[in-house]
Length: 479
Image (cartoon, rainbow, N blue to C red; front, side, top):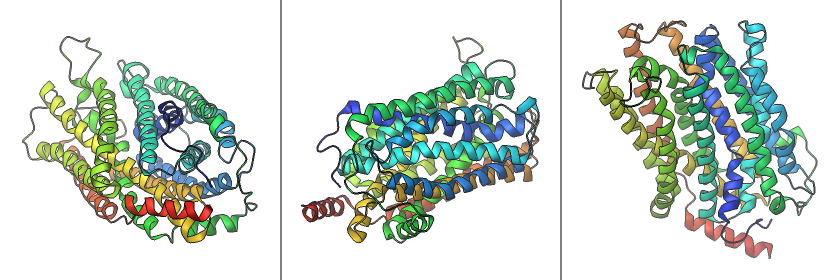
């Protein structure tokens, strides 16, 4: 199958393609930053029960993803294989997203109610994200251009999430109650739902002229047996197994890190109590948190290309994972052993943000490098089997990502319950022993998980030279 674009991809097209990932960024901020905190600290549900519901939703979604990927592989229309999905799913997704953050009657939902709406939201989001990401190997076969497309997807996804985070801390969840303001989450949901619709449909319309074409080969009809046999075949690909082993622990760490963010910013680092000189009292150090994330996303954009050019994708991913572990571990260990400056001070916040800036930049480099590596497995599979299966591999990646992220969130919820972190805890009133346990869990867990991820990503077997040689062989064979 010939790539849709030969040669360099126009910057405008890269921006349009990446714009579709904004919806994924909105979802990530909601699910991984706020949802556990919202249902436990705001709605009053038990944290272990909430984390169990979110884990179950992720596992169900992970099983559905291969079906969606296979269906998109086998979609045969004059608009191509992926675009029809991107037009159909966003509006229902937006409605489900609003329901997720609006408990009926303001009452505490049951476990099954939370599980049901979380599953609906995740499946509809997958109907957008799996086809969108699966477009990349169809758009170009170029080793570096694929990395560039992933850079645009990640930075625009991150910026969408950071926009939601900024609005949360400055508008939706600002004021006296802050992150405990129930009504603020409803405004957060409505704005996020609208942004999801605009990003996914807008991206699809912008790519329509290039990608809307009848697939060259009509695929076989969809069957569940063929779908899961293709996924099974994908997991036989050695490169995919090594990739999955490295991605697994990276995503477990991401689930733990994101779900604990509201806890560590409010209860450990007390960022919402640090006033910035010269600014209104309502603007605290916590208000700057989204800005640090935004700067790290832009720093990644200029770092990942040169790293890939010098070291290749696997080594870049491994080095960045190790760097993330170091810069995450340092501030927590300094705090635990008494070397950190006093909390509630500008010095403390400044040093923490400097560490966060470097660590988060390297973390994004790891994820972009790994995602871009996945695209090279498509041609390896094509050469071995004679079939293209982008949807199968990307849905397999989502399966790994969602199971791992869900496991990370589940571990967080169980740990919070185990250390008896109160559901109505106020910052500054949590016992020191509980805070100490939280510090150790976060720091040591991150270091161990990312070290394991670096080990496996370093061993990824497809180099630039091997990929380019394979593309040439496939081109000659097609000719």
